[in-house]
Length: 520
Image (cartoon, rainbow, N blue to C red; front, side, top):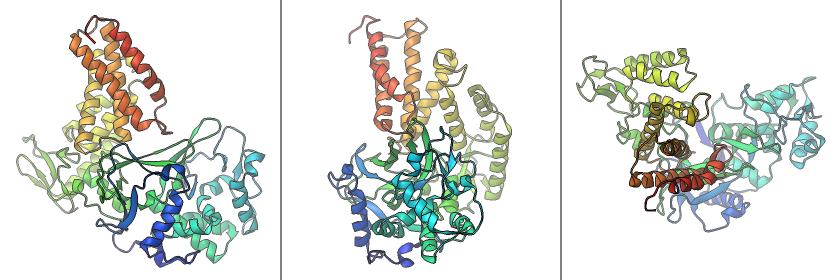
């Protein structure tokens, strides 16, 4: 992660003593820790792909040591520490296996556990013994609340090399961080050394944690937070050149989503890929404490996608407005047609009103969302605006799975609309250089189902296509599912119908080939 603006972030190497006596201000020392961490997984012991260098973006970053091609695995990362998110809306499960099917009981350490097997597992036993060595300050502790605050405790049972790696990461060093430690100190007496390391863990988690997924023994997917130290060294770009996924054991795979030439920096994204520039930069400032000035942020049209655009406030004008200087919050918004300049405060008020409008409208079905977008929202926002695109995505994700909107239930109008939405969003992703991302994969999967339904209706003579059109349709159906499968296969968060759709695609197309007489 890149350092923050102002003085809100420091590199922990300036404040923490190395457990192994390593000079962690030295890049070579961090590279040593990084390589040792990578070598613990066999997938990383192939051809070397990256190194750590000072970044022109700011701070440190990962760089390609050879040409890396789209779809190529760059590295596999595993978490130093992981566990439940701190949010109170998190459903608490067993602190060891994360299953919530079995009845939970409270372990002697105060954490929720599901079985004697989990209670005696090496992973839990080490933290259980540590907690048991602390002198309690209170007579009882809420096990669910304790579970939400357990992750920093797991930093205390790392080995010395892992602690050094944790201490080498950039952190958010402002007072609001460390709520977990304050909770723990309320209930237990801990040493100063333990408090310092747990505070470092909290700050590193707030700066660098990833939302991760694990598969439980009962085949449930659980949502956790994890600190992945190699991935934490990746800097941000709003059009990143990597994508990440998780396997069933919680390991993180970082894969090239674009060509990365030797010597180029390897980037990830900390924001929504379809958010407009003002929203992305606001999010980064509030959560990561820096302001991005990548090539996408510097381009007021975002490579021509105009994701942040508003309709001109001059009612007689059909133009759109964008910030004159996208890197300046005080910049006026300027219409591309009549040149009307609008102060940012006025634009902000309108955006707040739109947000309230969206929050006040019930949108339970694709028809509800579509009617709101076409009948209300596009009076204020053009079709290119990221809020409109987000609602279009909601429509696409609902189609095929919502009762009354299964693929075979769609009207001809809705089937055409589904295809139009998929193609439009995919075109935007291509323009933003997001060619090989999970978002693109999910859109291709939806387009695959849409075209497959089109194929089925052809069988029923609802559509008339030439032999060449049928061949083109067959090629696109297979191409869409292949793209989706190549990106999402093995990802624990992949749509449940991905595997079945992939296996059945060829037989469905072959059925069509046998139905008509034309040259194959």
